[in-house]
Every structure is written in structure tokens, then in C-alpha cells.
Length: 441
Image 1 (cartoon, rainbow, N blue to C red):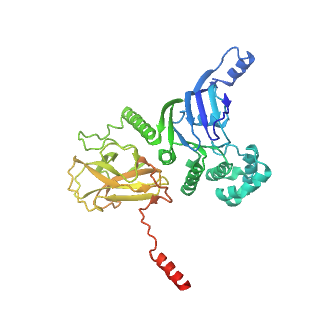
Image 2: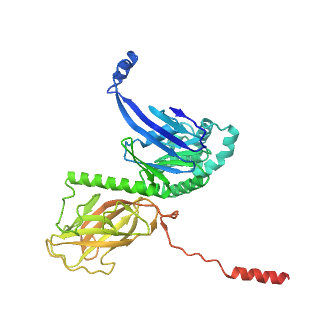
Image 3: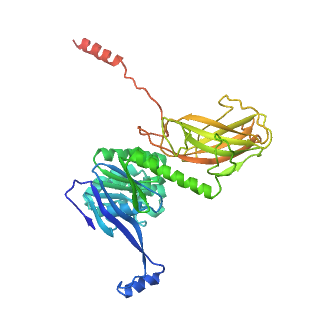
């Protein structure tokens, strides 16, 4: 059941909560069950959540992670009061504002302005209160004249801009966010994250569901890991996120082994990377081939998340099919928007590789000192050439061979990268003030 308690506004409590849905094999089965006044069952139960118990404190950023189908969205729906629990009790205290599914709560035939007033009325605001909030919502959404056009004409990014602007200006005690920010552009995502920090500083409780572990690590105080509707782990965000990523890496490795992917190009040498995680596009004259690619941490262990201000190793293993007199190995780093972010190769770094005979294999490690980058996904593309990377000299090139996420650091990132900066105050200012005081005397 849903209930309230004398706890402070902004708190949430789950006590032995389970949620099930009736699954019917056909619409006729539902009618049969109704015709028997539910004395006979023509459905099976699907348990989206099972026996969840936890408490969210006021002003906490509480993150929820898990694979698709783990029950994350169902959990938010219970907190929002959209759906009641099948068993147990959910206790919410204070006004809840939810940014759940894209465009949920909007009438597509209404204009953006009309939907602002509609949502405000649903949340209990008077017309006068909405009038006062409207300029701030319009300014934050930044959708221009589209505010006076039907929502059905909006792009997905414009919908989420308006939805987020409405949600944060509803004066919530609890803000629910379900993966909606993933469709926003980098500029708007940064503005949203800054606002999340402001809301947290003002004591607003935030329940944040996301597949972006970088975002979770950047803002989360505690994190709940759901696995098939059950609580797998709850605690400090760094600890839970690390355990989740490790489990996902093991799962991917098991899938790769089952698909036979990990044995492709395997060489019985410890420093040879095993397998190519992904191939979006591959080209080259095939005089040599890439046989393995890996991203490692500073200790040589497989990395599932890039940590800012640490060292990462990008390992490329190659084998020559024909003799290469001037082999060059390199990589390209792309950000989540597909923009070529950085890249280098052995020739550019001043490293002259010896010739490789036909059938020989070798490995090149690029040790990267990572700066603080915007927490997002980055992909590594890799290649080998005979000579410089001219079109006719490329032996093998693999686009987006490895995708990996950058974790958030201690600083908020404005743009794509945080540049180390030293700030000094002008030491002459106090002297000028003294001169002005002497002139007055």
C-alpha cells in the first residue's frame, strides 16, 4: 500500500515491497477471468520487484542501476504513486515531481505553454502560481517559439527540455529522473546536472535511474543495484558501481566466449590482447591484421570504466600477413557524439617499430594519462599501416572497436574537458586601495 508518515518531507521508505503484473496469453483470457469473477485464473504473475526494503534520506541523491528489465522504472512508478505495490508498503513524504518516460504527462495536441499550465494544475498550483513560474520554465527550456506549437511537432530533445524545466520548477521535495536526460544534447545535459547539484544543495531528494555509470558516479550519494527485481547491492556509489561493472564485464566475457569471439586471432602469449570487442567498419589492404584490442588500467587489468586523472593502457595486438618494412600502429578516440576527440600513432610519438616478418605478431601499448573529461562514452578505433596512415598504406583499420565510459571526477565539467587551472589575485589591488586612501587624507 501507499502511505505517508511523520518523517521529514523528502524521505522515501520501502518495506518488503513486491510488485507483480498479470500476463495474459491472449485478450480472450482476460475476458474469461472477468466472466468467472476471477474465481479462475487465466493469467500468470510476472514479479517486477521482489521484497525490497530501503530508506532514502532527505536531500540524498539516490541512484538506481541495473540491466534492462531489472525493475528500475517500476520502482520509480511506485514512488510517484502511479502504481501501487502488490505487497508491502511504500512511504513517500512531500511533493513528488517526476521526469519518467519521454513526454509522459504531456498532451501531444496541446502547445508547450498549454502543457505547462496543465501539469501545474495537476501538481496543485493555482493559475497565479503558474503565471509566476512560467517565465522561468520558458527560459530554462530554451525552445523558442516552439513553446506556442503543439508538442507533437517537437523533437525528442525539445520534449525532454520542456519536461525537465517543468519538473524542476514544481518546487519538489522529491525529484524522480528516469534516463530522460540521455536524449539531451551535451549543453543541456550539463545545465541539467548543474541544476541537480543546486537542488541537492537546497535539500531536494533526487532518485536518479540511469545506464550512464559516469553520471551515477558523478552525482550519486548511494546506489541501489537491481537484478531481476531483487536488491543485489545497496551502498556507497563507487563500491556498487564497481561491482556492477565487474559483473557486466564477466557477463560480456561469457557471451563472447560462447559466441567464439574471444578465440579469434588468439596467440599463446601473455601480452597479446585477446579478441576484438566490436567491429563497426573495417577496411585495409590486409597485409597485416589487428588480432586483439583491450583497454587496461595502470596495473594491466581489464578496465570497465575510465577514471579521470589516472593512467589507462590501450593495447593493440597485430599480426603481419606479409612483411612490413615500416609498420605503424595507431588509434583514434571518439566521444559520445561521434566526434574525433584525440588520436596518435607510433610514428607521431617518435617510436620506430622494427620490420615485422610474415606470420609474426606483436603488441603495442599506448599509456594514456587521462584528464578530467565529461562523463560519457568514448570509443577507440585502431589501425596498422605500412608507413604513414595514408589511404593506400593502411593494412587494417577497425572503427569503434572498444566502447568504454569515462567516470565523473571531483569537478563539474563545462564543455568536454576540465583544464588544470591556477588562479592568482592581482597583488596590486591592495596597493591601489592604499594610494586612494592616502589621497583622501
